[in-house]
Amino acid sequence: MFGVYGLRPSRRTVSLFKSTGATGVLLLARNIETPAQTKAFVAELEQRLGRPLLVAVDHEGGWVLRFKSGVTAFPGNAALGRARDPGLAYAVGRQMARELAPLGVRMNLAPVLDVATKAYNPGIGIRSFGPDPRTVSALGSAFIRGMQDNGVSACAKHFPGKGAATVDAHVDLPTIKSPRAAFMRTHLAPFRAACAAGVDAVMTSHVRFPAFDSEMATFSEKIVRGVLREALGYDGLVVSDDLCMGAVTKRRPVAEAALKCLDAGHDVLMIAHDLQGMADAVEFLRAAGAPEERLAAADARIARLLRRRRAPAAKLSEGAALSARVASKAVVVARRGAARLPMPLSPETLVVFPDFKEVRERFTFEGGPGGPEALARRLAPACSFARAPIERANLGRLPELARRARNIVFFSFEAKRFPGQAAALRLLAGTAAAKTAAVLIRSSWDLALCPKAMTVVDAAGYRLASLEAALSRVLNRRR
Image 1 (cartoon, rainbow, N blue to C red):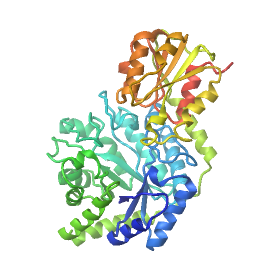
Image 2: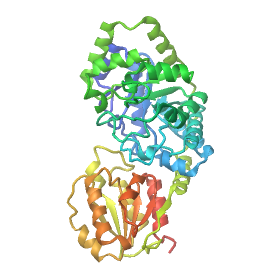
Image 3: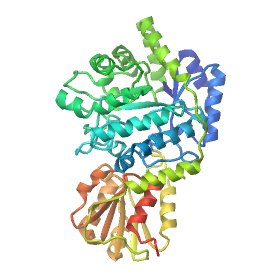
Image 4: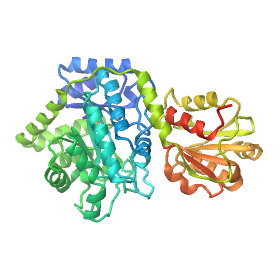
């Protein structure tokens, strides 16, 4: 499964798929402008190849979004975890499928079934349904059924569970040293439930689990065949995570990684970014000569997914209402400090918003990087506004504006990761804690950085629905 470049299939892309026989394409933000353009992209690529493709997209909701418009941006798993309603999780999966299938998408690389822990996990965070494996199992299974009952294959990830990782696999290799029995009881449970629910695909993780094997799960026959296939009895599609991630590339070339991944028991090998690595991997695999029965089994699993029947398209208005419902259930007051809620809608209330334009190349926002702040300004027109940096550390006029304000609402965009957000939170914690309400929108773990005097609201998401629900909680919008 390859990730390609451009908003239309280029001659190079078509040539790559023809020469390699690649079975799937991963749609990324760089391929998506509008739903109509995405549908045309898929149709043209399949027409020029003369065969169907396993078309996949990461459409988790919350952190992971590829569409700026035209498709519902759901708050994400942590918000659903707060609601604790399998019916709501099923409805979200159903709506996602009915919006994605008409575009030609056959697989959604969701849901994340990693169980959250108390430790800060920079790669998962609010992508998890939460810390209770029973809740994760129930919500994940309902989400899977909602997707697959409506024509789009689900892909449970990241097997066997990387909720306890403290390193982001995009950067380097995490190691989880949990004892085997405890790990299987907690982190493996949601995957056992997903297999029982008939999930079409399972994605493995670039994480090392010494209790199972010295190799990372991606390259571990003991984990893929021994645990997933044999212990869990799973006979669906096994997909690798992107082999271009730092956990892999810091240790071996992509081509060599692809062979080790195939040998471990995967059916689909994902290479999302390295065009030369894609060609090298296919050449390397052909030279190695994979067993015919192994390839035939993978082909049969893929063919089953390509035959899945699609459901009718859904109305976006239904998705918006469902998204708002989930978001409203997610907002909680995590700490009651000195600042009282709701705060007044007045110029004396300063709303400090992340400067999303700094990270426009890294993250997708509804309506572009200015969309979230535009919503906040529309909902709180009487308030004063300031921007806090995300990656840069220069706070500009923020210290002066914070000193003058009577009340402050600070939207915290993962201060544990981004230095600009950390600097802004330190400023407010040190000089304005008693008049500040921090709203956590990307990481619930930022609570540890907020002093006891600071009121903290956790929205568990930064999609527009989550921001609107949070603003309704912290500002007196009834006047």
